[in-house]
Each structure stands twice: as C-alpha cells, then as structure tokens.
Image (tube, rainbow, N blue to C red; front, side):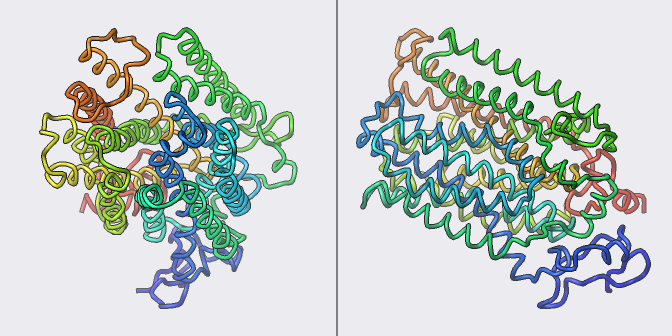
Length: 574
C-alpha cells in the first residue's frame, strides 16, 4: 500500500528500484513537502547516492579511530626516531585526543550555523593536509603540535557527520540504517589502524602509516564534494525548523557565543590535560588536583552562562540574536529530559568501559604476552568483521525491537568482555577460548548501543542543533574514555606497586613486564574496573529505559521526550 499524506495524497515510495529512497512521516501534510526544496535529499536522493552519502560521512569516524589506533602501534618507532622518552610518548596520542575532544562543541555549533556540508569538507581537507605533513616534522614538539592540529580538523568533521545524518534522513528505516552504518565506522577504523600500522611497522617505514591515511582522507574530501547535497535538510526537518521559529538571518549566523566557546574550550583543555598527565606524574602532584578543580569551576561557569543566554532568548526565540546577546551553544534545558540525560550518562560510562577495555587488551597482548604489533593486530581483526555484521542486524532491529532490550544486550556484552580478562584464566590459555569471545562481545556492545542512543539524542534535538548533538555525543564519549582510562590506570598502577612492594603513590612503578605475575595482577585489576563501569551503565539503562518504546519506529520523538509512542501504546492496549 502506498503511503499517503494527511490530505490523502500519495507520498514518494521507497519501493521503486531507482526512485527516491525515503518516505516522510504521515504527520506532515503534502503542502509541507510542496514548500520544501525539491532537490532536498529527503525527497530525491537515489538509493545509490544515499549509500554513498552514509559511507562518506562514516569515513570521518573511520579515520578518527584509525588515526588513534594506528599511532598506538607505531609509538616505539616514532619515539626512537624523534628521541622521545617513554614517559612522554603518550603525548603523541594525547595531543590529538586533547584537541579533538575540546573543540567538538565549538565546531558543532559552527556547523549548525554556517552549514554542515561546508564544515565537514573543510575539516576533511584540513585532516588530509595534517596527515600528509605530520610525519615530516623533525622533532618532538613540532610533531605533537601537528598531531594537535590534526585533532582540530577531526573535531570539525566527526560531529558534523552525525548532524548531516540527523537532518538528511527522515525518522524511520532510512535513519536507522544511516546511524547503524555510521556506527560501523569506528570498529572498522580500529581494525584498519591495527592492520595498516602492524604491516607497515613490520615491513616499511612508519611514516607510510600517515601517508596511507592521508590518501584515504583525500578520498573522503572528494566523496564529500560529490555526494553530500548542498541542501542537507529534509522536508520534515524544514517544517520542524519553521515550527521552532528558527532564525536564519545573516545576523543570527554571526552570533556565535564566543564567551561560551572560550569557557568550555579552556575548561575542557585543562581537565583533559590534568587527566592525561595525572596518571604519569602522580595524582598527588599539587598542580594536578588544583587544575582539575579549576577546570570544573570553569565548566560550571559555562553552564550558568548557557542557562542565562537560554532564559534571555526564551524557548521561542523571544530575543533576536546579536553579537552581544548570542544564542547559547547548548540549551541546558534539554537535560531536564530524564531519558536524554540518562543517555548522555550511559554514553560516558559505556565508553569508560569500552575504551579502556581496548587499551588494556592491547597491553595484555603486546606488553604482557610479548606479541609483535602484527600478531596483536590479528587479534583485533574480529572487532571489525563482527562490527560490520552487527550494524546490519541492528538496523533491522531498531524499528522492531523495544529499545530497552537492545540497550540491555549491549550493556551486558561489554562488561562480560572485560570480565573475561579479569577472572583468573591462565594466560597460556588459547586466544580462541577467551580472547576471541571478548573481542566479539565488545563490538557487539558498541554497535548496538551507539545507534540506539544516537537516534534518541538526534530525535530529542531540533534540526538546527543536530551537529551540536553529534558533538555532544562524541565529546561525552571521549571524556568518558579519558576519565575511565585515568581511573583504570591508577588502579592498575596501585596494584602493581603493591605487588612489587613499592609505595602506592610511586610515580614511576615501571612498565608492564612480559609474563610477570605482578603485571598480570595489575591488568586484571584494571579489567575489573572496566567491568564496574559497564555495570553502572547497565544499571542506568534498567532504571531509565524500562518501557517497550521503539526508537527506530518513533515518529514524534516520544521516546526521546520520555513518553510512550502513541502508536506503540495503542498496539499494547489491543
């Protein structure tokens, strides 16, 4: 049966082979679509171009993960050539992560104001240039600086990619497939990063890792220019923006909250720096807690400032935006939505568990078992292969299975993966007995949770805030990962120090030693910590999402707004 509008007119079907892929919700009338851009992606994108578009924006997530993981494998090679001591090699990775995490919110707002397509392409161009030039830096300072500049570009295209998906694809199957496919970018990037760096480290110069990544980033730039439409707002989103009274005047486009940008960026930089260095210099080093407290105060001031701007402008844009009274970067009132806030907290705890699991699995294989980078890489390949399969399955389940069940499964999988490395299984046991199941479970968790929560947060935000929503999701995940790793590292260091008969607050306990029982105790303690993060995430799901609402089937953000979907509720009553 052909879908029809509220007035009885037939809407474009997705059943034709080469016709438009997407069908608009019946809650919008045919007149709404008549006033929409006829070339808007929601109405006229072919199936092939839709697939190409999703693959293009998923390339941002792919390259972000690959950029981190590939460098982790070649850290010893970079350190030897640039004469970087072991105690400072972490900054080769952290400089990228620091810039990436701290500029996400800024670029999210800029993309929402000046255009998601433009910022995605410019960010990808910048990433390409930085990847191509970074390996030629002659010393440690210059190398770390260009790694930070690389992270600055990635912060522009990753959240923008999420925003493009949120406003291009209407709610339903099309958006479900888009978000699920995007979720596959991270695990595939992880596999690619391990694979390419392992092979190059074994057979060629480490600089080729950056060269290959630069070529791939260049392909993303070309694909972005070709496949991302200029009008990345579907008809339903245009109607929603009109209902919200969105102001698109030139004055509003200039009204970026620069005070908010300075506050949140400086606060996040200080917090990330302290968390990164705390596990190296020791948490009792005086400047570490002082910096953490100061950064939290700055972030608190940012929240108060955003609340003031939101009250000033009002929910219906009571004041015209200006350079002196800009709209807020983040609408603080959205956090009053219980499920939205719960989703944000779940993302933080989940990535504290998932991100730390991947790091300590690498330590276990490469440092404790003494495997080569290539052998370690082979053990991570299942994460990408299974991840690609899971995205296809989850896309089919999002509009059929209650979100609660999907989230519970995902939040059970990752803690079990950590548990397999925490329990006293003999380290001589075959990888296929516990390592392989753990790798499969961790990616099952990641690729089920992210599409669900990504869709929920996207539906809770208006079209003009979609890139900011993507920035918020990514930033919370990054900070969850950073805080989780800092805590896990502290636990691991304390356990190893105690096992070796050293003071717990010793700054330099020493590295993980191959097949040393004390090192194994520390690794298992860290895995128990990661297990705890996963259990907290699961507990929040059990409390906040106890309903049969289906996020992939919701047409009016009922799940995102914390109320049952009328259609689903009617089905239950029948």
